[in-house]
Image (cartoon, one colour):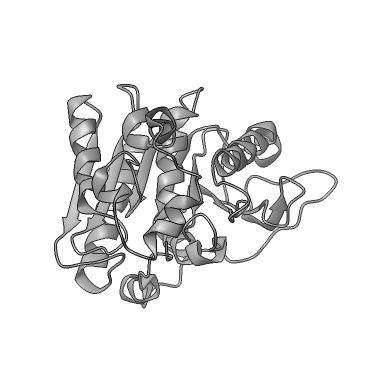
Length: 289
């Protein structure tokens, strides 16, 4: 699955062309620890032995033990992509939410010999455990929000619904993320791009496994508030993936918002992109405070 081709840079220009806010200085860690009154940035923090097991951490100035963390998860069909593709979101969040911490993560990539699941879910767990272990050092809370794109949206939903045993996730955003591997519209898609990606999971006809990796089947009444964005002409993700997820959330009485852009594909720009950010920003303001 190709990384969502959103022209986020254009949105940044529109929103911030006249802005000169946000301190950009990186404060280095010293033996005496970190000063929570100062902005801190650390790139490529290692949380495992693999070259892709790294994440970038951005900590706001004047943070406290109540400072929430937004976790960003890139797309790339589970087999490619990089956290740098989410850097525009980092810029937006730092501008609009200067009191939030950000963890922009990489994870191990799948290939024909290594399945994405549970490897990539385990990597997200490792990052979250790292942050929890070091929350005093960084002066942050354990409260989380997720923003995922494409395959990263699938991982964000699945982790938030099935692996957040401590109920730390307070909101999750899916931008064109797969949600249901039992959906015939997805399983039986003859798209030559889609099928090899689905095959990465080693998917068989075993319903139990298909449900185990599907946010649609893992969501419960205790799920965090969820915001969903999909394109009506997406060649990779059938619209049923978003619509069915919305309906399941409604049936469980889980707070949610759903937007379908009928004429858009696996990504969008212009007025639709502005609409996405406006809705996501409002959602974060309500649910991650």
